[in-house]
Length: 325
Length: 248
Image (tube, rainbow over all chains, first blue to last red; front, side):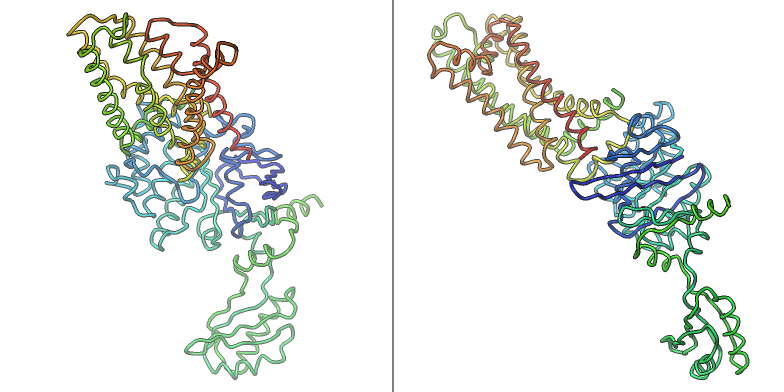
């Protein structure tokens, strides 16, 4: 559905994107990840046809956004960051205008608008001036606008930025519902978002591709550095018991009221599984109950790790190479 | 030109809802009404002053009052077209819709031209007032309005370009005003030169030459070509400007 090939974008002498290539297949929900300033919005703006790449090309359903922008754009429902809207228009009026602009036939325009009003949770709001809407509702109008022409591809730039937790949950639920009919590329710098909504992730930093693959592949890029354990029993005794375990580094008692959580680092991350087993065994030898064992390898840490250093091979590439051998 | 019609409609809504269009029309009609009143007063007190020229011709062709308001009004009509959208970011939603830059520019431009036409429409009443008290040559009125339309087309096109060149509405209005005023001044300056190429060149670009001719029913193709290109060139430049944002 999307095929980016060596996208570069220069702003003056600053190169915002450096040979960015990635693909999104039909039906996928892909999280587009990166720290602020990584080039996420620039990439999405290029894909949506708002900006042109300095070099390289992107194909939307096989149509080049550079050479056939009108055809390519008609396949995309794009929601810009912060969903800018005409504040002097009413919600229904605006969506009708957008539907007409996007070439929805006159006969089905009204139906399309009432459908997206329901989908985006804007029931009863169609007569309200956009200028009077809260940020969350404006975001929904932006989303409704992206949906109004039923495009096969949705590109959403930070759809949950600035929303309260309830609204974030609603937007996520909506995106999950939309999965069935649309391919979705959604940018964010919040990783739990990707874990909640997406099948795959594309991670960029400083304008370069850092990693791409399924969420499991991305998580696997970083082996756990530590394991977190919740115990029943005396934490100091537990700490003492873990002093000389092979493969385990330092044990810290996490600061909580009941002192029930320990974090044990691994001196050799490659041996994490065996070390974890030894840690649990050691604790049960001293009669300390183990309630919970969580390897701390969240996507957050993958993100922090990967974006902080130079780009390496992608998970997808690694897999491919393995397959070839 | 896909997208031209919805953009034109939305732009009209924008002009009339944020009451720019109403304010401009009220101000404009007040000044033109004042002008018409004094014109009639002067005609009724000294009937033989301007020989061979009726009040309708004088209205269109003989006074700076007629087009001076346009120097300010056209830039104010066009200043928000692109400047506002760029400042608020809505330009991103507009340009990511499947529409061509030409449709965007022309849709917006034609919306202001519609307001311009609507703004002039009530002045037709003046002509009916004149015709009810004397004779009036309706073909001269028609060419007078044709000249008025040409001036509007050119001024609004310049305003549209100015609005695309900056994201500040004030700068857009000022830029267009200065540019239009420069041509205005050149028209005046013609009077200070002896017969010769400088004078004829300055006269050629002067809005007064156009309106003088057209108000007397003289539709000169040189004037037509000059004023139509005066509208087309800025519009073309605007389309290129909008395209260039993609590559900036």
